[in-house]
Amino acid sequence: MDRADFIHLVRLSEHASADDSARYRRGVALFAALGYLWVFACLLLALAVIVWALTPLGQGRFQVGRVWALVFGIGLFWVTLRALWVRFDAPDGVRLLPEDAPGLFKALDRIRAKIDGPPIHEVYLDDQFNASIRQAPRYGLFGGAVNCLSLGLPLLMALERRRLLSVLAHEYGHLRGNHGRLSAWIYRTRLSWLRLDASLQRNEGPMALVSQAFFHWYFPRFAARTFALARQDEYEADRISAMLLGNAVAAEALTEIAIKGHWYAQSFWSGHWARAAHEGTVAAPFVTLRERFREPPPPEFAREALRRALRQVSDVDDTHPVLRDRLEALDQKPALPSWSRGAALDLLTDPDKWVAHFDQEWRRRQADDWRQHHAYLGRMRDRIAALAESAGRHNASEMVEWADLERRFDARAEVRERYERALQHTPDHAGALRGLVQTLPVSERAAGLALLEQLHACDAPSRWWAAQHAVESLENPDAGAYDEAALKYWRARRKDAEEAERRAWEEIVDTPFFSQIGRHDLSEFELGELRADLLRCKPATRAWLVRKNLREFRWRRAYIVFIELPDLDDEERYHLCRALERSLSLPGIALVLWAGYSPTLEEIERQTFGITWARGSV
Image (cartoon, rainbow, N blue to C red):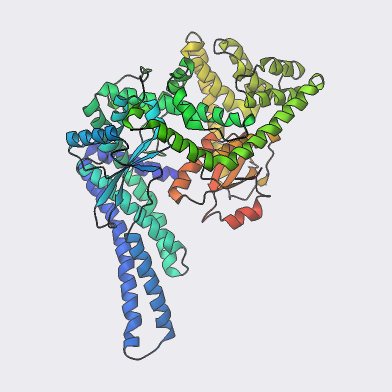
């Protein structure tokens, strides 16, 4: 199933859910039962093969073919039983006992009593800026479920108690009533089918081929048909949260999480890893984060983060609705929230103990990566020093490199004058134009737009970048008065550039992985940026990078990144690769693929001109 067909089926499921929710859910349950039928068909086939193979042996006759059939039947029977008996790994983090967080457990009991929900059997504290709840089967698919809540220490630092309770009520809302049970049942059975498919793919023969053909047909359709159910479940969980804490509290919690989560991901961690330039010993992040969260985000950052969140549009890549849609469903207008006063850490008996625990764990896990990053920043510092010594002899590219490195080393470095000198030497230098645009204050909108106009005209690969930054500047009320004509002009340019980007992307994904590729063309600085990004991607162990040579856009820098993610399942790998496509520091569009069934690790190692990055190597 291609993406267009998948989107079409998702839209059909959304319409069906809107027209008749009960009928839609019955249809989802019936389609889920089709997967059960396949599993049980495999089980019955295995039993039939075993009986057929054993019949002549019981009569004293020996046939080699029937012995092989017996081996096949027993293997299929065992694989199918394992698929039916789903076992979940324990959640990451530390399991909390009531004495560790009496306030938290009392709050969960009150939420349960108000919505008449099932009990929370296990609560885990981890180091993520998130909260989630899941149901793990107790006795396989045919038994009860254990409800597990995972709560992130950073989230406890970021939100006051009332807003955190709103988050907990949302998560608890996923378990309520028949709707929650249906969603959880479908989630558990889907994992069972994934396991059966993975097991059968390792086998050879006609049964494996039939299995693969069925699952290639079934899984995309199952995901599309259940998409509306998952999204509807999110809205229903928000409604439960609003019912218990109020619409305003639920909306403020969602908005504060969106802004602080963006700051946490984009600013805090980049700043923390920058400390490796001067600190050879691994720095503890969470004690610092606790202090930083006591102050609100910078006003300009908060406004821009909110604007970015509100510009997002719900799509088929994520069942969670975007912030604008969730606020609209709560009948609340988008606005900066009043920031949390205090933190919900007081729900824990001894917050200092848990901060120290997760700092120690983080430092232990990141020791090798910190050493690697420390060495990389040391090389960058040496390059900056070398460029500074020969400052009077620089050409435009060297001046831009110097400025870029200093900005990477210290985001607050004063480098505007260097970009301006580079443009005096080479007026149409694309790197200097991009760098200067990024150093201008928001108030200098006119100067920025003039530079973006120049960049759009002189450098075709930068047209989308120029149009996007121009639109963002014109949409920013802090930058000046609203200019409808200019905004319309640049939006049209962005639309044209996006169409070109779409065609370039289609060429990347529609051609074989290893056709039209060559060695990557990254500079040492660009390569260092990529390696720093990969370093912060915890599941990644190795990566390979190649340039994709596009026929239609020969000037467009485009890449394929192959990444090894050994400890994730295929669904987790898929979502991580899509996230990396949006976040990797590469000077062009990139397709990110994982080493697995296709392409295989052996194919990647044979055809990608050598490894680009490996965890732990300096």
